[in-house]
Image (cartoon, rainbow, N blue to C red):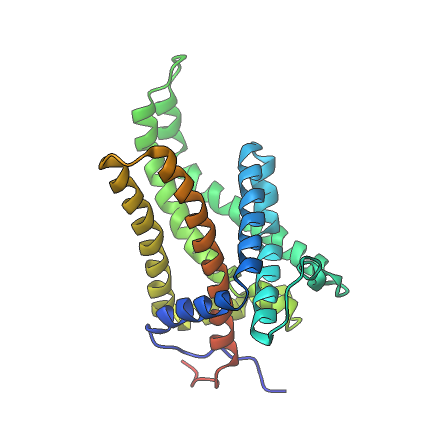
Length: 260
């Protein structure tokens, strides 16, 4: 068996991944729109439940990512995705447990990262809260900037560790620690392509919402804009999900690159 090795791709691969995701989406748009709506529903419900909801969402992130990748692989193979096929990958013995263990690791790492980000700034945050019944929200917001920046840096590291891990665990059967290592190496080798990819999607999201805000400032109906915003978010999220799969296929199916 050919050893699993991450290819090194040019920065332009970031745009290629998005375009290939669009081509995948075109094959069965309704299926991916359905998945986008379902995941958005769970995310919104989780956000409404303090602590527990967010915890469950983080725990299930690898599993949902794996289901998304499996669906995209079916799109590539030309398989019609019926509703019953979405959970089919979890019928493989050990698949659900492996993804949930990965989710527990992701949850634990996220908690440690949050703790490490907050502790150095804890005294300044407590000072901003003060003893008054009504805290100084401006001071608290300023005190939170440091922890948010530090956590953001930690989150970049976490994203690299777990980016490819659901597929490496689910499809290649790699042990978790080895999969985390492979994912980190793959992301490091393709860091410039990933930067282009993330920046491009950020431009799309902020550009669309900036356009809607501009229309609102110009006097467009807020009700109409709210009605437009929801389907736009659903479509863009579905396209985003479809673009995950080409990242995996181009990095781990391309001819192995020379070691760095």
